Image (cartoon, rainbow, N blue to C red; front, side, top):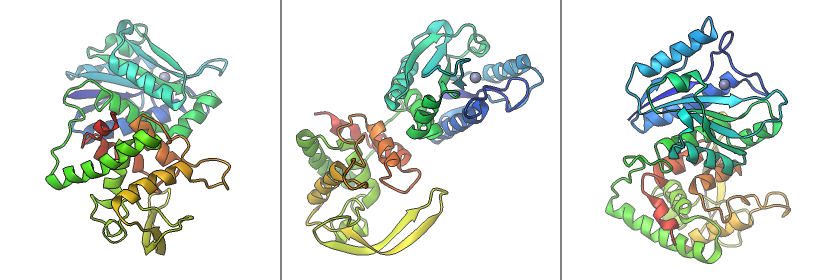
Length: 351
Ligand SMILES: [Zn+2]
């Protein structure tokens, strides 16, 4: 599979984009480069069709198209942010040749809608040079309006370029798309299969009864946090999730915690008190209790409110990160890519 990605517009001068509440050309690059990285990581051949500088707008467009047409691409994807003269325009829209309703394009709009954006749909884009002149299947994505405060708030709140690039990636290549080679489950070892089945059975039963947390995400978290049940907490405290004491009435296990700062650096907290259980089942059920009841503002609101009962695994992962479940800045991405897709965990969500 070979995909061309164009981070829309030059950086400045001729061909540069909208100047909204943030600069369009900056965020087309944040989204586009994050997308390219994910695609490369999945083994896709990526052709970077981004042009940073041109003397005229036409030169910019011609150069982008030439880069795209030099290769046999399965997709050409151009990333943009919208703007309107009234600054009142809102939502996501995608342009394709003759307005072709590609399932991938429709899926991106739908997933964006679930983040809170208005879905303006897939539209006829013959008037756009890069849509008209590229040979490959092409889509130009207007992520949202960069000059509208509500859209910008939704964008940042959802996780900005990280969240948007993940959605595009999933719809083009991963679960949401229709590429048969995508999202292929990895062969599991016997021990891994047994671990997934054990946690999955408990998580599915509890989901059926209490609808707190989607089983696939519970399993992914358990694998990640306990290293398939081999971590010190899993062995000595029967804890598959690193949940700190916070109001827990039962036994505790004391060991250090490693936390990550927003800038990516790590620090250590000695003598952290962790919840300890009788068995792994109690650990899974308490994890769901914790998600259902945790409040950090004295009971006024539920910290993990958006997670509770949510049926979309991708959104659950992003919500967990957004609500501060883990300090790791790549937590959601890792849950999704390293476990959910790889081990086909969503089969446990079907009841
Ligand atoms: Zn643009």
